[in-house]
Image 1 (cartoon, rainbow, N blue to C red):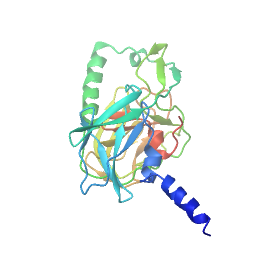
Image 2 (image 1 turned 135 degrees about the vertical axis):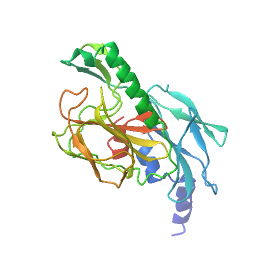
Image 3 (image 1 turned 180 degrees about the vertical axis):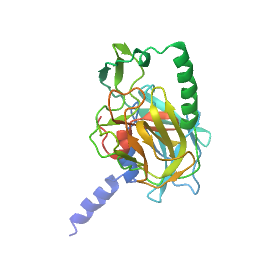
Image 4 (image 1 turned 90 degrees about the vertical axis):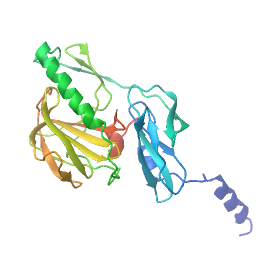
Length: 274
């Protein structure tokens, strides 16, 4: 027994001062299009955090320490990045990640090179959606391990470099689920419906604010079953799978945005692949 005491003491001293919590293990994927979880200490009140001049999500993990959960846009470069914590710079590291290509053939050429009238519509709709992505409500997210919004296999992953009819366009900003027309779509976490619309590219679309800049967007729906302003509990049906907008067949496209950065939704359902 006496021989075991020094060994046990050495093991205790080798442990980190603050063991990593479940949320950190789930979400910390600091790559372009990923999430950085940053330890902020255990002060009495939540620090104010900003990244790229936008407010960031802050929660207390395991009832002990504050952590910032920061969305990293696809455009971020690997290397040192900074957040502001109560006005002071705090550095963290971003790694690299390679994304594959996807080539899609569309029958409607307007969905590749829209005419001037459609371009005006697209610009108007984009501005409306950007305003929704930039909302920051004080509510705490009800959960950060999300449910899958539909029952179905993952199809097109996040971050693909996309080519429509041979022409490169914006990377794939969400995660696609293969599902039949009319399949119910459920809220992966509680939230408030902040925008609904029928858009040129996205088709019938629902935005849900989960709190502190964490926002889901669901598009290509065949039907919308909620109204703007409606509070949704986790698991509430918000619409049905369809193929509206720029879609080659029925599926759900799900975006997750954090501090106005579109990030890989697979992180929040435990399906992230480096």
